[in-house]
Image (cartoon, rainbow, N blue to C red; front, side):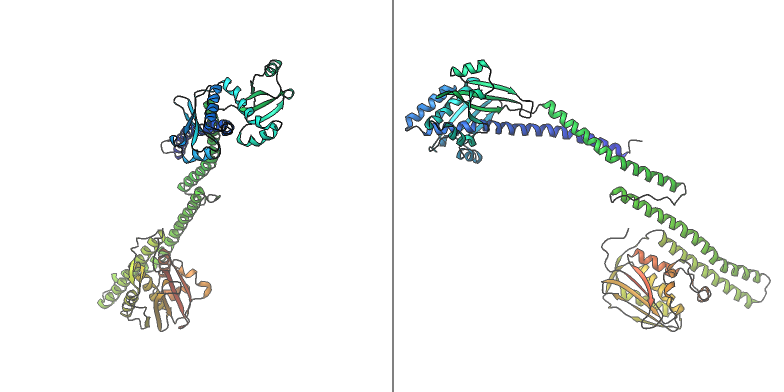
Length: 540
């Protein structure tokens, strides 16, 4: 039962998709976190790189620069090297950061070592190259020393110049009064003794844990340089990422399931409708909601049901008409046979035999018409479209009709001999034959045939006569099977009412149409069938 269920396959596909999305989400999270971590490292070092660059630039000679770098290395407990620029290979993005007085951080995850490259103001030929194995509290406490060294040149204007360099820091750097800081007595005591402190704070907001580095200002012990708060990098925990991903996928699956419920309901409606058709009820129709595939399915079902219902009704009508049409020749044959039983006159018997033969031929003709009509009505026949000379088919029908000695004048307004259209020759011949036969039957004296391409580029054939014509109100009904406008006249002329029905169905399967109006030149009926001269796609 479930093996061929489309919904089981859909749900299985969704399950596989959920696994793929979860794996992709994990990999994407790792990639994003790596990029975030790199940006975080660079943001922490950018401001200090600028301060260090400014400090080195203020040294008056090469020896003082090297001494300053040596002191900074000892103070921070980090190996800092003064190297030539041509000894360090930088990428285009890294060169851009150096030009913007920012730091370049290269982190090696396998041994947890960061290499920092810093530019030196007014010294493009040298870089500072530092290796950081870990960041200790002692190193962080000495960071404000470099800021104070920078501000020492601007005594009394520290706040102003601190604001100027703020753009180089991704975190706040300010001078604040100790009384404005929320510090305990122990922390205040350490600051008054000239020691720096580190303050950790847990924040329940998105920032998480933050640290602040506070160092007393040398010229005014009541004030302090405050670096931070600096948020610690928060790697997205795997459990949180997995939980969010699974929750999102669960909500997604619920949404998809909610979308599938209407689909299942519509499929059930289609199944019920098909069961009713199987039970013989052809009146059931499906509601068409929207324009999606299921709406197309409902439309196709309704068209199919209408077609089946029309075929069955046409079959019933055909059976009634056929039984009516067969009674007359069969009755004549039976009457003629009864007359032959007691008749000895040879010539009379031969006359009756000739009448029986004509009735049998009439039966054969009727059966052939019925079979052709039934084939065209039930579905698309086997059509072998090819390039056909329209002149040859019209000329062939003209020759065949003249051979019947109808006593009517047949005229052909021939199209160009070289004109070829795409059509099925056998059925086109049948159309022209039926139309010409119908015109000969009702014409007073003349029938006119023509064909070619019209202004729209469609192929056409046209048959006109000088007979009484067809009333406009009856022009649609004449294409119905066994329809006769004048039953007694039709019988006298030998028609069964199927010829024009066959023409109508052939025109339909050709992708064209047939219409009737009044002949402008002869005054009688004019039949025109048009169809595409070149088929783009075959009609389904």
